Length: 145
Image (cartoon, rainbow, N blue to C red):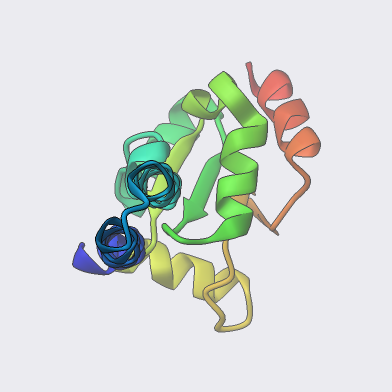
């Protein structure tokens, strides 16, 4: 769990150190603006941007019942963030599994990607797709609804 928060905490820490130095130089406005940018970067790279994660086994069960795709992701992954942002509100229609929180999810991703933990891996109708185009994923959501 803590691994998912390392990058956001580093953004806040680095931003705080740089802003503190700028304050000592008398550049209060620039320090505040810089700190806001670092906090926003931390927020975007945190698990809070993504829908609530569930375990891989639970996601597989729910997907079998409702036919919705499963997304295996991890925080700090720029491709996962791109997929999440480009899906918009429709992202909540999918089952999200954080591979850093769920060992079974990490194992499923490794099985689908020749032993690599390449994310995002989207499973549609039991078939995995590694780093698919967000427009294609949106089409799959429409088809499963």
